[in-house]
Image (tube, rainbow, N blue to C red; front, side, top):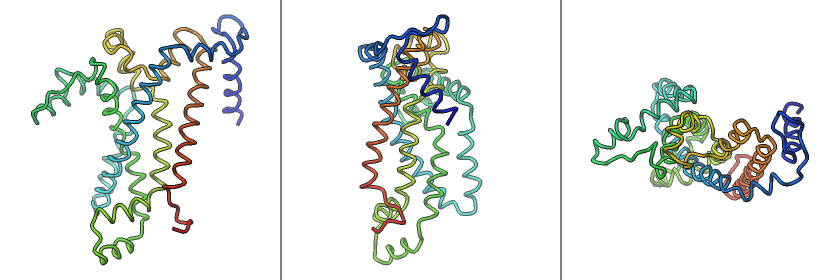
Length: 278
């Protein structure tokens, strides 16, 4: 409580001040909040962040669920494949960013080489502003293993008797998945959607390491990789505008709270818990 509530209350106070860490903070009322509403960089950063989130979260869920379903059929080898699937999650974010700078290179990258085998011409993932965010989404799927492991645990709890009864009734695999698997793990899917959404809205390290580590990459992509937390970081530690950065932080807190409340309300109609009557 002390280490969470204390900094939150202090940042709320700072958001009402002008403070550069060199001089005492001066009270400016709601000026920082008025400025962020009219700041075009805030709108750009928020758009980039929401674009990434709405693309990353569904892809992460679908891919993780597919991998978990395959792992469930791996039998005795599932332990080995679980380890292989989870290992990429251990990659340090900065190393991951450096690796994908090479993989996503428009001229020599392995991803465009792979697309070339199938007759496709890959885009300039790291320099074309249109493809920068999809490229970051591709990179983010590298850590899909953690979500897949959670789904694997959830799938193992779905009673096998339900599938046997469905097969006796002639239900197709798709109907079994839709009417048994999805309701059986809906609580887990809801949890991962909320957690991944919050994490995506706070994306920072990989994008910053890829596109803001040197002037060449920073200039090539314009503002297409400017995520909200990156802009907040720049305002706090490059411009030393701690008051304005605190206001940005509280605005992001409100955005996350609103999206989470919407997800909670939607979940009441779609999520099934074992303790509830169906």
